[in-house]
Image (tube, rainbow, N blue to C red; front, side):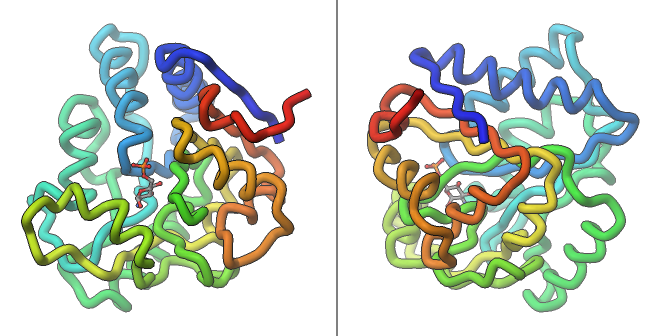
Length: 243
Ligand code: GLP
């Protein structure tokens, strides 16, 4: 495990984008596994900037997102389909037929089987970018999700519903379930980049990195990843004992 700590958002963002850029330049068909949430937005903005500056291309890449809400249409502004188009895919040269997210327009069990099949064709990922939930979830793998899971339907926990409900504003139709790439698939990625920012994540980051590995804190599984890079800002790293 490597822990990288940056004081400025600009440096933190540059490091994350460098990691993606290195993967894009290293292979004929790089496979990215991508997250949503507020944490990666700056990274996507930097990747778009580099694309526009002619520094990188996504034309040869495959992208599989980590998760999606059950029941939201692709054009719903709270869906992760929409999020990814808005922050990244609308602005870069990734081939539309190489962009994958769990499908919300079919029955969830079928969507899981379909996503597993896409993964079997393109996976494992060369790099998975991960945010971190306040309860230690990675992707949408909530506490209790079996580590052996492949794509699965998860019931969102109370803490996740609370954390994400601001996005839904006055709407009363926030989904209670999501489709998620399971922990087993995250762990097969050649590199895992855990991206964490802010004081609010300091205690869960410490737990994820030091607590005995348990399905009750899904992120602890990453301790076993052979190439885990933790990218934190100073606030998120506050409780870590760094050498
Ligand atoms: C959502 C996403 C996760 C993400 C988490 C953290 O639950 N499904 O993939 O890691 O939010 O979000 P944020 O980065 O906004 O703290």
